[in-house]
Amino acid sequence: MSALDVAVTRVIGDFDLDVAFSVESGVSVLFGPSGAGKTLTLSLIAGLLRPDTGTISINDVVVTDCARNVFVSTQKRRVGMVFQDGLLLPHRTVLDNVALAVRQARGRRTRRGIARTWLERVGAETLAERRPGSLSGGQRQRVALARSLAGDPAVLLLDEPLSALDASVRRELRRLIREVIVASGVPAVLVTHDAGEAEELGDVVIAYDRGRVTGQHLVERPLASGPELETPGEGETL
Amino acid sequence: MTALIPHSWLNALGIPPWIWDPLSISLHAAFEATVVVAVLGIALGYLLARGRFPGRGAVETAFSLPMALPPTVVGYYLLTRLGGPGPIRDLEVHLFGHPLTFTFDGIVVAQIVESFPYCLRYSRAAITVVDRRFEQAARAMGLSRWRVALLVTLPLARRGLVAGVAMGFGRALGDFGATMIVSGAVPMATTMPIALYNAVFYGSHEQAMILALVQVGVALSILLGVSRLGRVRPW
Image 1 (cartoon, rainbow over the protein chains, first blue to last red):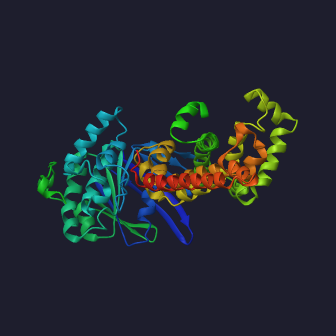
Image 2 (tube, chains in turn purple, brown):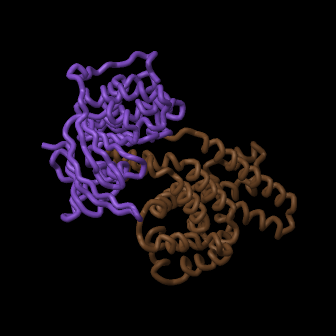
């Protein structure tokens, strides 16, 4: 059973996307230069855009099938998304941002409890009552990661989550992102144009160029690297 | 409305009925009109900003027309539509028990028509500039379109929405032409602008000056209130 099956085409102006790939467990990285169609692919998987032709299945459930006019709305797809600049809701606290994404539980207290747990897992529990506008870039992405996983997604989509950050913060967050995703057991698709990031974060790297998949390879990892989820201390919060 | 505060109290405060009566009618009518205008104006503004349907431009133009027309023209059409014999008048009698012309309710209707375009256009503009990516992020979080609108789009557009509602309230409060024609300036339907006109017309210049000053004070209070509301964090 694949976590995610994608076989779609989409034409936007002069750009022509025609890709097909499958994602199993772990982190799959869509790697390629800017304008290769990586972010467009994520938008199609999330249901933010419709493909012209093709199908998308999540956990073997068809969410898009153009031939049969099937299109499951974004909010029913159970995807979690991390955007390049976080896109935390600026008028809500960090805790509210994460709690709002909890869809598997009812009741404000329960949702906030789950949200706090995820903030702890990404080392952002001390930020709970702050507004996104007062956070650093690294803190915002920690919270965005917590928010994307708090809704118990079937698949996690990360759109260049580190590209807007300083090099030192990026290094720190790479480790955290991989640890948290692998420990959560949620299959993830991560978009990047950074080769080092692709190798460090991915289990599989899918190469993109000009709207096509040009290659795919497994990343070799030492067996000992199976991550245990750690909760960084307050001093480590970026 | 005036019965809410006994005249004896107002007299004790030194506020004569010729100020309080039109002021209370103005505030009461403008408040009722603004409630209707806020709900409908923000809802239609959202549809125009985010909806995809043919004829959006025509809808906005049609609802904005009173903004470009002289208020007396709006008043004339309201008088002839609301007051003339026909199904509209029959409906008024069925709903209110009497025709709306020359009544307080008629003033409210006139003020709704006059102030609606301001609220609509401010709301549409405020919602249009909300970054859609926040809405996409919220949809990816599992929020329905309704919840995205209520929890994301409208709070992010709040400053423009507050300004639009305030503009509508100010327009309703200050309307003269349409209100004058629909109400006929009968005592139970005399608003502040009409009272000021009457004072000038009958040569009561001192009363006119005071009525004008009161309206300046009310207008300043609205603007200050809006300024403060715009800074308040939303729910």
